[in-house]
Image (cartoon, rainbow, N blue to C red; front, top):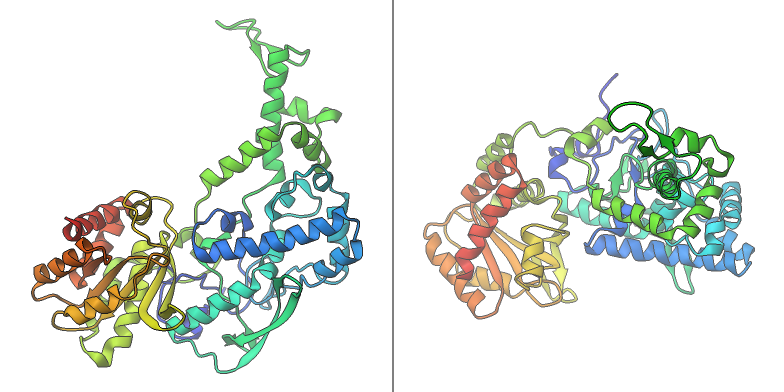
Length: 490
């Protein structure tokens, strides 16, 4: 089978999947990955927070319409959920990305499924992902499609930012479909400067948003959580279904009925109606399933994404180091250096840092910074900064200086001037080399001691060491960052 051209190859970015924040999809056909609203719900970064709020706003509007018996209103809301064929995710076959949307007649089927679900009447249906457990005919593909439609506004903004970051040409404004804005407006048409591959618009998706399938699975919930609960109930009540061991040292000991026995009984047979009735009576079981899913939720690895058909593998960190060394210091190569740094930091700090933006505007556009990453760290160094050291760091600011000599006070002041309590007071200043690094570290210590913010200087040697740490494991990266932090904090 011939190799499919990826987005990065089409635009000659020369980057592996590990260096990119988005899923590097093939420009023809789809790959079997899905956008998971549960993964979005339980992330702590700003993009995920905004996406989740949009989903909650729309889903709540639909549920209220159904509960008020305003079916025409609910149908109108659902009718805008069209085929999301701009992401190249899903189960379409062949070279054309078709999607499996819920527009048109299918909106009526979706409304019917929601209306018939007991979960709406009992209040069990809280989030979009709950539909996978409690509403008929809704599984990974449909819920992913619905999610894509609902967060399209945010995906457009994300795509525009990523294209600016990597220099992807977006020469003209194109129609981007309908987006949900809520309020009195609801749905409205959108247009933007988006990338076009072979005449088709592409929307980029953050790696953190995708899974092999959405986290919630009704049969998994039934087989493990529900049946195990019922087994224990029978054992506790010593029902007629309880088994007795017939031989061995524990002869006569009671054991719960087999799951297969329970599955064969009419009162316990699998269906979403049964799961609705059971969950309404045993809400703690459903809550336990949700909590366990949150604990076990992990992002797909570079290997996972490659197996699915996305991106190219980074064979070794030596490739990145060699590429960095090939870039000469000086203004002429500043853009090349910046873009190499984007990829390097993505490899080193993902998934704790994500959504890089180039020369991002802050303070209503009065100031600009070379790179801003969103802090999505739930644990480790970037979480510790905020939760233990009380250093504001919703965003991590990075200034890149492709200098052959040391940055001075003006360059440090430039970065410190970007800091504020709302956005963050932590960042890195990256330079090719420091002639007198101890002096620059002292300047950073002085700034930190005066409450101006914390800046860690990194040169090419630091980046090389961090890449080697990454090879050994994330804990090595955390340890190295901790050492560098205390150089400027003590």
